[in-house]
Image (cartoon, rainbow, N blue to C red):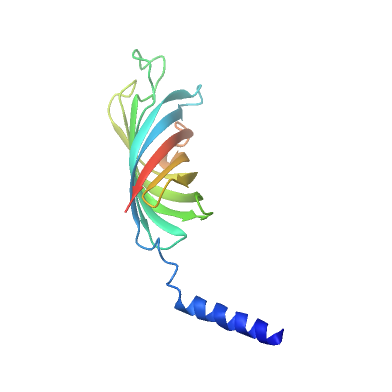
Amino acid sequence: MKRAAAAAAAVSAALMLASPSASALDRQQGFGLDAGLAILTVNGQSAEMGIAYGLHYSYALNDQFDIVAELGGAAVDLDPIVTSTSLPGRPSQLWNADAGMIYKIDIVQVVPYFGALAGGYVMYGGSLPSAQAYPGVEIVGGADYLLSRRWAVGLAVHEHLLFTDLSTYPTYLTVTARVELMF
């Protein structure tokens, strides 16, 4: 019995030492499209729902951490007639460019993740007299389902915070479906 246990331990150790490193995701890159729902609250009024869209890029530092960059847009006010007196400060379009890091919890084919990004936001149209730019951050959570080594689909939730004007724009939330090509 002791010989069998010793032989099993020796074989296990040899296999572990001979097997390649588990760094298949190191330096893996991904590029994808996002589309979904945008919700913007302005000056405590009822939230306006619109359409969110965007592109994202990821670079895997290792199995857990990715550096990510996103370019997102949203049509946040789909009402074609908005006056500055009825709804002051309400944009019709919003764009953001953010970069940051996410932490992935790799569970075979389902990969939940969360992270934070920082960047800039530009709002225009609607009842805004001119384009307005703000610095901001976004807190992101989501999950991807790996269809293969090259393709993934998923769902992401992003809470955006515009630091310089949280009282006017307290909530900007996007919920998007994602598709990603990994290479």
